[in-house]
Image 1 (cartoon, each protein chain N blue to C red):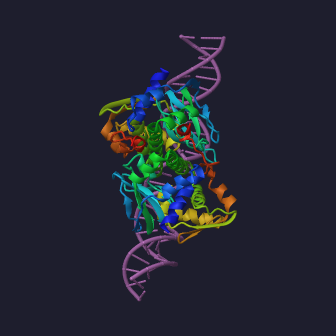
Image 2 (cartoon, rainbow over the protein chains, first blue to last red):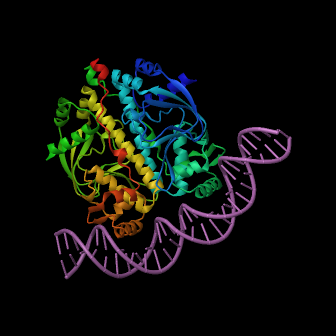
Image 3 (tube, each protein chain N blue to C red):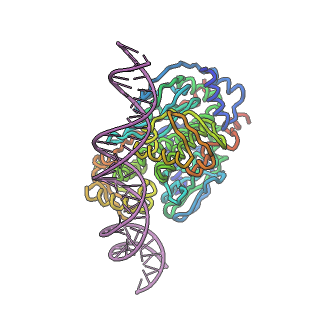
Length: 250
Length: 250
DNA sequence: CGCATATTTGATAGATTTCAATTTATGTGG
DNA sequence: CCACATAAATTGAAATCTATCAAATATGCG
């Protein structure tokens, strides 16, 4: 199970960066240690100095912070196969905490191993770099979501993004697990729980979304995309790229 | 002037990544072409395929998008010495447009040159990677700002961030040029222009901020930091790092 | 001066939050 | 299986925040 999650991670990288079988194997061979975390548990506190990176095996992880008055904000969600703190390779003191949304399982990989792989194989460095860049693009999209969209649009957009991240999109009857409470949705969208509750009801009344006990059903994907002003381009790559090793080869 | 702006960019990289004199020189030697852009002009449209990266020489640049109903959102500002679309090296089709806020001057550098430098000098790749990661962290902080803070806090936080980016922070009488209109501030903070106007007036009445004709004065930095719930940690590095070339050397 | 742009203001409408209370689900131990 | 405790979802009413609209005032620029 653990090895197969790493290959999910490698597949994710391969979708945007060309990796040779040898490079893929180097990633699969990295040493890992497993662990469980309980709901709401902090995995990596803010301002900690990080020396391990983690991969989500099962469950859901979020990056969170508190503003002055105690209001919590979620700035991103991570699903199985994601490496939430890959960016700490570059900036080892995260400004925001990493926290389990529900009971989850994770793997840990030492920074040393990741750095060694990136040093030895430039295209692995490139894949990591491109992956962190993708995370940055997602964060920008969240700024737009929270800053410029209505409550219903924010929720619809978030559900669309999660569906794409989990690769569950179908024209009809898109369905997937998204084990969050309405409170989490409020924290991710910058709304109150009450308003989330009513907006979810409104989306359901429109026939766009069913969300119960962490299970999501989107009957009509295109309608949901319109409702969420969603353009998945920021999550995708046209084709895998590779440039970092060219002049080494030359 | 143009060369000195590139050295500002190199200094910015050197603050977080160790670059040898040779590596710094390689960056300074990259071919550049200059250009002017007028206020509101789009420099790089969304969904374009980018083959040049730009550096801000003078003025102010913003990344912008429109939501369904036409509301515009600014997701980041770029000041002289910044390279706004460095990330396009990794993801050449930006989801958001790059736009001049006021009349500005920029330089353009071909992707090819940047890729060659990054391929030849792993630490240059590392510096670029770390810089894009920093941009991602800033974006996450903007999610918090727009999602979890009051109107006054959002504005105070933005002014603090710009002061740090421009390295103008002083305990008393921090002052710098920030050539935006209140409309731009509204687009960056997810507020209406009217609400920005009243919040600015309130900040001025509190003695925290004067903002007139694109000129900012922050009389009491610590008070402003409190008002904006600002922790500049996400903009800084403890000390310059370097790891990508170690195993090459070994 | 006159035009264009930016800021300021007031009044109103609408969206969203807050607060408090209730209901519904979920899990746990007896 | 029930009783209980806890967490989550739902509801209503009121308050507050924020946006919208329209108009007036400043400001810069040719």
